[in-house]
Amino acid sequence: MSEVEFSTRAYCKVILHAAKYPHEAVNGILVSKAKDLEGSNDVVFVDAIPLFHMALGLTPMTEVALEQIESYCSSNGLKITGYYQANEHYKNTNPNFVANRICEKISERFGQVHLAMVDNRRLSLDMASSAIVMKNRDKASVALESDSTCVAASCLLQNRAYRLLVDFDNHLDNVSADWRNPELNQEIDAVL
Amino acid sequence: MNRMSWQAVAERYRRWREDNSRNSDLIVQLWEEVLCAKVDKLGDEKWMVLEQVAVAALDLHKMTVAEDCLVMLSKQFPGSQRVRKLKALRLEALERYEDANDVYDAILRKDETNTVVRKRKIAILKSLGKTSEAIRELVEYLKKFMSDTEAWMELSDLYISEQDYAKAAYCMEELLLHNPHHHLYFQKYADIKYTQGGFDNVEVARSYYSRAVKLSSANNMRALYGLLLCCSQIANSPKAQAQKKKENTKIGQWAAQCISDKYREASGSEDNQPVEQLLGALTLS
Image 1: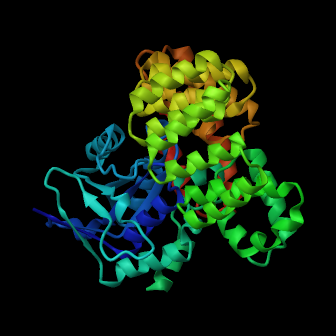
Image 2: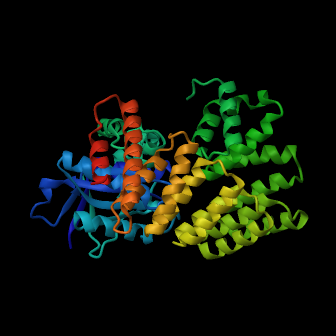
Image 3: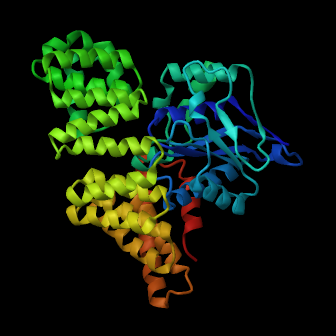
């Protein structure tokens, strides 16, 4: 059974994305450093790229986003290694057809991809443990970068840092909004 | 946030009421930090604001804030069906769906035409994960209230979540009939057709994206990208004859140029690399 690790940055962005749109399903991509992947089954997600909070089931903008993300990854020594989704329903952590289809598409192009679902019930202003569950065939266990990762996430939620988060939908509404989230990344680093 | 004057906050609230936008987090924050203390200065607007805050607070599960507002509203409007509906909404927030439904049914017995309450009952089905039933009820609702735009949109989204793209497209067609100049509807219809896939659907998608681009004066990014995607696919398809390939290549390049210009405008000249590569990948030989 392999292990999957979320860096603080990746973990916080997933949580903040879910928190920004509590009444919608949200999804996004997880990336790792390309050189770290050689010869190892374990995966470290160094960043998360929030995709959508509307019409997750429609494909055209997903295709556009994946092209841009792939381009960004190749220029920055990164690789797409995972997909995350937080469902609309509070208690539902099961991947739906959207999650399965997107993972399939990504796997075809980029190789094996991990599927992470957010457990909405475990989100709070005071989290003590990971709110993410892996749903791939081998159900890898989730590790967080450090003991302070959960504290950082809780702190960011309390400070409403999710208002800074830009997902691909936000970017399409206003192209000057940067889905790479440099401002938010700084906020996350500052909290640590 | 707490530097805003209460008048500025009240103005924002007004705009949100008009747009019917869901900004529950901001609404409650501004209420607690600014407006709550000044609510008596609002005159008649006070009651609409209290209702707005109550709904936002229930959305955030901030029950005490919601209950305080409900108490004030009940006192001012005893026996009001509108306040009763808010009390039922509170029951929904507490997941007491059967009790909420009882209240809604009682309201409907007094007034069959209360569309908001009918839609709340459908929302409850959605909360319970009963998507097929929600769809069934919404279809029945739309037979009676066929110009309810919000309901057609909701039905379209429900069909998309069930992968029934043909029916989702039909809902968008109804919306287009009611609103033949709304670029967002054209774009969403195109999104659905593109998702259905296949040469014919992509051609339809292309024409609807074109219309959306035209109606939005080329400001709808999704429509521009969609147009580029469709043109690429058609131009590269074995089913397209030379003339069609040529036409689509030209339009695709035009769309790519528009997109490129938008990025350049937004970010100065650097950082266009991802866009150039994306366009390169999407465009045509």
